[in-house]
Every structure is written in structure tokens, then in C-alpha cells.
Amino acid sequence: MNDRHDVVQNLEATPVQSGLRLWWLGGPSYALKSPSSIVYVDPYHSGPRADDPQGFIRAIPNYVLPQDINRADLVLSTHDHTDHCDPTTINPIAERTQSLFAVAPSSAALMRGWGFDMDRARTMTPGSTLQHGDITLSAFPSNDWEDEDAAIFVLEADGKTVLIGGDTLYTETLADIGRRYKIDLAVLALARNRRDIIDKPLYLTPEELAQAARDLGAKRVLPIHWDIWLAWQEDPHQVLPHLKDSSVELVILAQGDSLAV
Image (cartoon, rainbow, N blue to C red; front, side, top):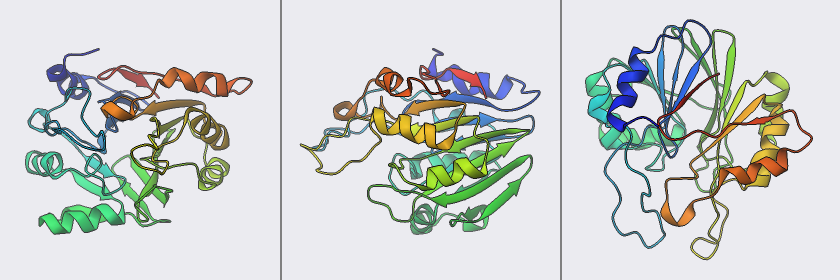
């Protein structure tokens, strides 16, 4: 695991000669680097929440601070929940970089409310595609527990394809995506659903995450989000038994660590 102040420095300094490399930044947040671009996904690097009656209390430190970021070419937001569309993270990145922001319709509405310069943003409705540098980004409907305008993204760069799930629950859209793309890595949100706190599923269970990865035909699957909220933490190793007899490889990272896609 890297010290949090070293993560961005290492990311920016590490050359990617081909394909993609992913750095997990904790919780829902990660970065992807191609030979020409740095992409931040759902960056949430503001201060910790204090006492929260629904258990959304940050259980991990911030491994990245917005003021550490010197370069971003593209920033993605999959939906409008604070941990995926955070003004105290997004606004400093916008101030410090020349990044374009590719965001779900709900995120776009939220950002307009902040007074964000929407000339720097692209609203990614389902079916839309964005070409930015060496990155191709396509948007699909999500099955978020609350946000009907959330998005799933498929990111392609230099012969590699990553499924960016946001907080989607299981949906047949994933099988459709799997038929259309060769998914090298699926990044999906895993957490314990606390029905005693909110009587709805908010995240994929280990079994559902494994089924989603199978339906996508993914080579590898990376669970994220399982660490961040104190009352909602899950063990990502619980996914492995549900991948028995499948060709999907389970990848588990420590915050700040990276892998070649």
C-alpha cells in the first residue's frame, strides 16, 4: 500500500507504454492511465463524514487529496450520490487541470446546481459515446437503487476494455454489454446490505457480483466500495466461492495499489 501522498505522484510519474493501468484510491474511486490519458472515476476525496445515523461514516483515510492532482484528462461521475459526485473534490480538480468531465445525467443536473462550468462537461445519456484523446467512453443504463439517471460506462483504450459499474445492482444490461464487448476488467461495487438501516439493496452481494462478472464474460473482476462505509463493509474474498468453475479471475487490491489491465 502506498502512502496517500505518494499515490498521485506515482500515478502521474508511472509510464504506461500500452494498454491501461488502474490505481484503486479507496471506496468508489479509482484512476485509469493509458499511454496518453489519465482518467479519474468517481473521485471522492473530501473530508470524513461525522456521525451519520445510517452508518455512512468513512472507515478509511483519504488516500488522495484534490490538491495533489496536477493532471487529469477525463473525470467520470456515474451518478449523483455524494461519494460519486462530490463538489469538494470535483471543483478543485477542475481548477487545477484542463480535464473534461463525462458525467451521468443526474450528475450533470447536480453540477449545474453548483454553478459548475458545463462547457467543460459532457452529459452521457444511455447510448451515447465520447471520444477524448485515446479514450472511447460509452454509456449504458444503470440499476442504481435510488438514482434512475445513473450510468454504467464502458471505457476502451489501446486495445483494453474496462466496465465501470458505479453502484449498479444486478441488471440484464450487463449481459447485453458482455455480448457487445470483450471485457478485460469489470469494476463493480460490493458492500453489505444493511436492511436494518435501509430496507433496500444498495450494493451487489458477493453472489450477485460474481454473477454479474460471469454475464459480462469478464476476464477479471475487481470489487470496490466494500471498505469505505463503517456499517456497510464487506469482505471481498466472499466473492471467490461464487466464481467456482468460471474463467473469471477475482482481483483484490489494497487502497493505493495498482494493476495492469
